[in-house]
Length: 153
Image 1: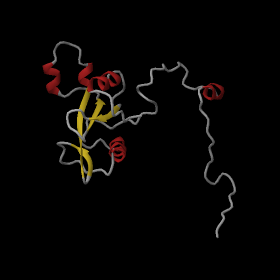
Image 2: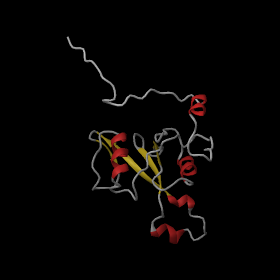
Image 3: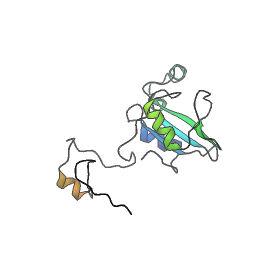
Image 4: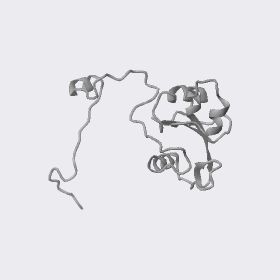
């Protein structure tokens, strides 16, 4: 849900400005070929931004942008010497969801598509029938909950 290669910087801001801090989207950078843009919602803008935008509305400034550069060693945040190289975007996202490192806060991995315009219902739980009508179905098997035979040979 977090990788949206085709969206613009403005679309990313529109999607994230009403989300909680840590919400993010990674997109293909339009300015730097082969690089990625990380747009993330933060709790408060940097001090310099507050002074510059005294017009009142700073909601767009709460979405910060970072460049993720690619190299033969992997991917990393550009301009952050204390950031390691990660083998792939998923590894970078996962690590930053545990520890913010050079980012202003930890990334919050989304559990639904931020571009999905369907509004959430007021109740936090849906009945199994409602979920099945939406196409949700799965089988769950807990490890060590049933006897298994192993075949070898």
